[in-house]
Image (cartoon, rainbow, N blue to C red; front, top):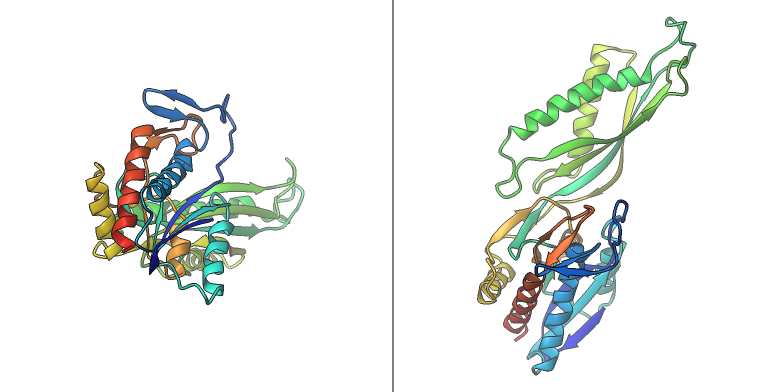
Length: 327
């Protein structure tokens, strides 16, 4: 963390980005930066070193040109966003626990948005479903119960359920919620009825859904399967979840950032993004938060880049936003 203090008390603006990246499997030189066609290539270039560079550049520009009139600009480089966001959670816990510091008034997370202002993004829930059977020799079907085939019945219903969700309008900026099967495993050997099958699902959520909806919808499907076959045995468990996030397009932070973005030469229009981000952690802590960052391509892919001009425009917009808010 770094703090640029104003000349008198006033609003606090957090500029936040995560320092961690995803893995590098399949990449030949992931950490050797290459500039080509005004693009910077390398792991983390877009997700999200480019956004972090824009933050540092903006605050450096502010410091070199007289600072800010009031309040403070807080630079937060957080860890672990690609897993459990322990960095963002530590950040908001620090501000909540320190009564001498009031909560920040606004936050910008510089995830890649192609220089649009992200006012909504999806959440997610990781679920584990287990079906149980009875182990027996493959030649003795009367003694065995196949846990994998039981899971197959659930998969058929999950596929139909997700197809039905995709036909619904969903959120005006984010579209419908969704789910997919991530991992499945079960069985012991060729000639044995499997007594257990584990399925791990990811359910992408949208603003307005009850927090327990992902678990409840799977539970309803399992209850339906028990009604069809009283011997059907299964259970669902919530492993980890993060809520979706949304801020009104009429919020002062959104209006000021849109204006600053346009003044810097960016589109600056509000949008929704499909991925989850630390803005949800900030929002749940009571800090109004938006997404705004440079564009590029290759998030989590084997070739990743950020557009250098976008980084500079993002830097300019963030500096303009800070001067607009910290007065």
